[in-house]
Image (cartoon, rainbow over all chains, first blue to last red; front, side):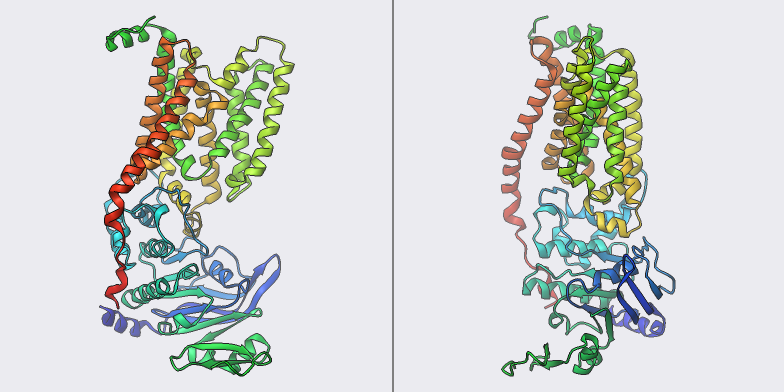
Amino acid sequence: MARNIGEHAVTEAKQSLLSAEMLAAGYGGRAIWSDVNFSFERGEFVAVIGPNGAGKTTLFRVLLGLQRPMGGAVSVFGEPPSRGNPHIGYIPQRHTIDTETNVECLELVRLGLSGIRWGFNPITHPDREAAISALEAAGALDLAHRRLGALSGGELQRIFLAEALVSSPEILLLDEPLSNLDIRRETELLHLVNGVVRSRGVTALLIAHNINPLLPHMNKVMYVANGKMATGKPGEVLTSESLTRLYGVQVEVLKDPHGNVAIIPVEEHHGDVP
Amino acid sequence: MSISPNLLADLREIWSYQFMQNAIEAGTLTAIVAGVTGYFVVLRRSAFTAHAFSEIGFAGAAWAVLSGIPPLAGLLLGSNLGGLGIALLGRRATNRDTQIGIVLAFSLGLGLLFISLYSGYATQTYSILFGEILGVSSDQVLETVVATAGILVGVGIIYRPLLFASLDEDVAEAKGMPMLSLGIAFMVIVAVAVSFAVQVTGVLLVFSLMVTPGATAQYLASKPSRAIIASVLIALVATWLGLFLSFYTPYPVSFFITGEAFFFYLFVRFVYARFRMERISPGTILKPPTDRSG
């Protein structure tokens, strides 16, 4: 399955799903970041890394058509972003459900598909089937009849992943799905997302604080800092030169034997870190 | 009017009074509307907002009494203005307890002023505060029929988007749903529903029909459609039983309705739900599904 889609992806690889040129965005006339260029293709798993307030969520809002860019060009499926694009699946940041919400998970996932339809149609079987297959892809089939308010953080993220997947999107925008997860749940969720990216040929952008858990899975990395972004393959971006240029201060990228990286400003480097 | 062991004869006796017929008809319609909208009020955590509507409506109704127009018109005007205002304040305004509380207190004060200015008979004000179901006229029943039909059609049209926006506002917005229009539509529906529920329970007791059945239903069913049916049934039984009991006792209908709804809530919340949890939990402790991918 994964191999077939892989071949399919190769034939279409030249067509970039998401791209930006000299893009700038911000609030109230002040740019958070500018001169941003990127191009992502079908089936790429992209890690978006950067400190709080750097504008990672703003990038998602621009791609979702929730916020107009201040300058430059951005295209989603070759067109300007528009709100409500059914081919984009989205998990918002700090997404939670009130613990008193006694609605079963299956209903929320179904609404990812049928929640945009007007009119009273209580029984729609196609959306139920789509919801069950999305729950399966998100490894959450066993949660289908559990109540939303009773789920743990990791379980809830799997339900949100299923909700995002139910409309069979080609792009997934995941805003900090790993926050509040312990290391084991983090690894589990990343395996799930990676599995979806590979088996469905989905392009996924995932915002996180720490790049190391993502390193085994991702194709590209996007570092956001200092009003700029550095985008490319991990080997190109995760170098002392490229990150020094981004941060504007001398930084060094250190690697441990497992390939984990540590980014350390040179001035404060005491010399005793592996 | 004394209760007999023959329930059918009792009901026949109740039905023989025109005011009881009107009360049962208006109460039934109101219970249906309150049960349906109440489910969403609870799901969206807008209980306080719904309560505020009724008190803004109280100021409107007191003003209407003073101006010699029907109190219901003032109620509808007040609660709808409040609803529009809150909806226009925008996203998550329904959770702004402080601002809503400030407006609510001012509305009550305004209502008090209108009452003190009104030199006539004060029963109307009392009935706005605590309900007047036994004094509903045939015309009011007809008005309630129209409002019920309008609200049910309205909820039917926005049912799924409203459910989606109530559970997951951010994703619904990203999916292109018009959140502001949806918010306004829902607030207007709740404002109208509250105005009619006030006829039964009064401004101060409107929670018993608008919130308690919806909150109880959340513990009874986890599918929204079933929970809405449960919410309606609870509101209906509370209203019918309240009318029945108050017919044979000297106590007010509103008291019985609030009391029944409250004790049924306690039963479901602490007896039924606990029993249910115990029955469900041991089997559903999860095995991590990702073990397969290794």
